[in-house]
Image 1 (cartoon, rainbow, N blue to C red):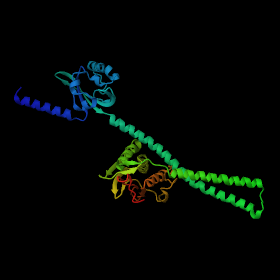
Image 2 (image 1 turned 45 degrees about the vertical axis):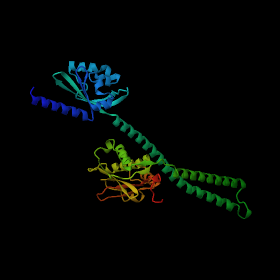
Image 3 (image 1 turned 90 degrees about the vertical axis):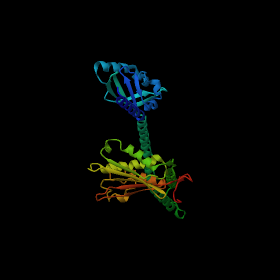
Length: 386
């Protein structure tokens, strides 16, 4: 071999070594007998073994027993029959760390014929972040569903308490008027036993009124668990959660988060409940339309942080707009009319607000959630003295 050829080979080897060492995914090369020939730095981090410790060893030391016990058989079967089970296909498998822990991997396998025999190249990607993200989304979904039910009951309880309090008060006044008329001028025009029944009815109506007032106080003063949090992060998590599934297929999501925006002081689950509700409403508005776009933007305005969710739908109907944020008002055939009412209540309980630009005439609706900036000096939201 002349000097030029040697130099080219050296350069090629150096280039290959650099690619292997800088690759984000794990790369393993094994011989047709299952012995590891290449074990890059990403694999060292992934499995906890230094390359010097595993090179020349059978690759099955990186596998849980249900894989490792049959791996050599798979290689022998492929070399003998040519029947592929994973080569050129790829699949989710499990790896075994040096400490014995088992973790999920995505494995793609290729092969190459070399002067030293057939070799197999495995590309491995750690699936733990993906699995953790899915588990987190599942947990957030469960929390959102639970919180939606709790808040729906709160809103319904408050509405019912308000509505029932008025007829109960009227009932007490009528009964008291009857007793006063019956005892006018010291005369009793109603039998004493009947007056006693009326007095008991007044007492029971008064007791019912007190119970309702306590229910309203409990609902209105319910504690909220708040922490310092990035509104943009809450929005992104809620968006990723909402856009899973066929309902969101084909919808373009445009996100624009202004950098340097201050944190807010909020209950993350309640704020995400608002975002999920707004996004689901936007998806409903886009149903059946040719252009399906949702724009999400966050920015800071003085002592307030805002997020706006706009869709390319037809906008809010003028007929429903005056009552849009009131309980039981809805323009959906299957809606309850509680979502936006609950969302605004949550926003206002945080010292913020939820408003809408209704759109129409070719413009979609734009819902804006505003929350006060977190004030680190006092450990709570900045509410401008409120």
